[in-house]
Amino acid sequence: MYCRKCGAENEAGSRFCCKCGAPVTESSAESGEKKKKVLWGKVVVIAAVIMAAILAGIIFWVMSGSSGDAGRSETKSEDTKNKNDSSKKKQEKSKESTKPETVKQPEEKDTNAGGYILPESDSVYLTDADIDGLTLRDLNYAKNEIYARHGRRFKSRELQDYFNSQSWYTGQYDADDFDANYSQSVLNDYEKKNAELLRKKEFSLNSGGYPLDAQ
Figure 1 (cartoon, helix red, strand yellow):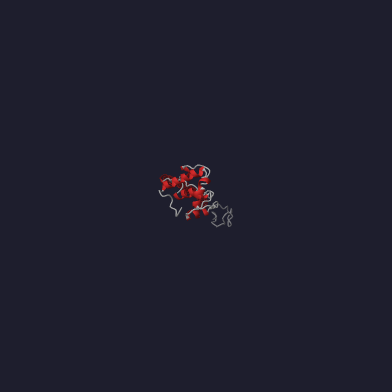
Figure 2 (cartoon, helix red, strand yellow; figure 1 turned 120 degrees about the vertical axis):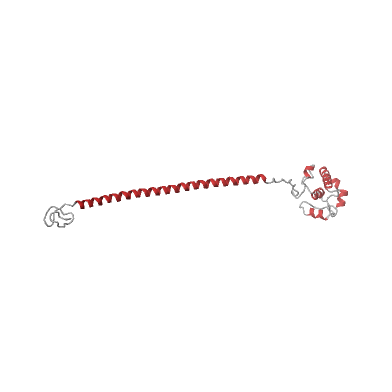
C-alpha cells in the first residue's frame, strides 16, 4: 500500500503513512482486486455447490435404475420359475395319463392256513368259488387232506412226505386198510361231498388228475 502524498510504501492495513503521516487509503486498483477475489470466491463456492448437487443427482439416478432392474430381474426370474413349475406339472400329468393301468391279478387263496389247505373241508360244504384259486396240485392235496385228517397213510412218497411235514398229521392206517374198512365210517357227509367236489375239479383241469408217483 503506497502513500498518495509521498509515495512511501506502507504495510497493508495502515491508516497513516509511516513516513509523512498522511492518511493512507487503498487505491482503486487494490480495492478492485479485493472485490474480484471476493467475487471469485463466491463463484467457486456456488460452482462447488452446483457440482455437488449434480453429482448427487447422478448417483441417485444410477442407484434407482439399478434397484429397478434388480426388481424387474427378480420378477422375471419368479415368472420363469412359475412357468417351469407349471410345465413340469403338465408333463407329469401327461405321463400319468399315458401310463398303462396295472391289471389287477386275482388273489390267490391262502393254502397254508393253520397247516391246512382247506381248514373247513370237514365242517362246511365247499363251493366252486371256494376252490377256484387252487392249482392242480393243491386240489389233489386238499382232497387227500380229508383222508389224512383221519390217519390215512399214502403210497405216494410225495403225499406222505407232505403230510408228514404237517404238525396235525398222524399216520395210523395203511392206504388199503383205510379205504376198505374206515373211509365210509369215519368220513362225515361234509367230507364225502367235498372230496368228490375236489376230485371232479381236479380231473376237469387235467384228465389224468395231478400226476403223483403212486397213490
